Picture 1 (spheres, rainbow, N blue to C red):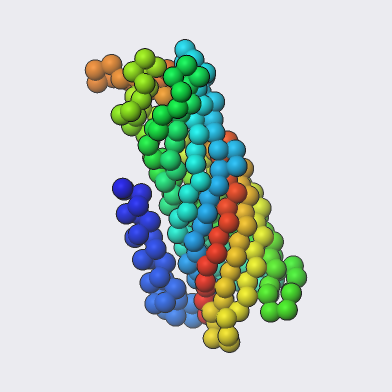
Picture 2: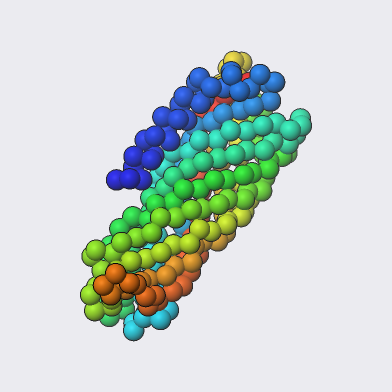
Length: 226
């Protein structure tokens, strides 16, 4: 629920930024603002937890979320983008002796910085390639439905630095600064995971591992250049 509220707030901020704040911030004509729908598919999507009595995997599922992006054109062919998105992954644990159970939602706030070069022009569509650096910040999971026999009570997810590449296509909508944008990104990396068991007011780590999310991200949206 908390992540859904974050998504609603983020989408509202995106609309306000694109429609209202752009003229104030972009007096030099080099700024762009975009609102996108972003589909995040964890290609790796899982992590192996060691230290428990039985083999345990943590699976992360794909999600569709809004994204807000501000860009600044440094030169005629190079742009720097700053993106913000908030996702909530459904997480499922697979224990080889107990089957699968839903662990809940892992909220992730991701800030992305991309350097993008214009490489080709197909008619009115600009083809652009770039590199991406992203900081993914995760909230922890409280496992109320966890298997008591495994002692799973809480999962901590460390923040992770992701990196990768992007290709995007921008097509103008008329001559008034609006454009349609589509974007494909592949990032590598994921969070370290630790599973805790509580005893009274104290906790101890009973299993740990890492999740290779390696997200493949597809996004569609509209933008405005000033």
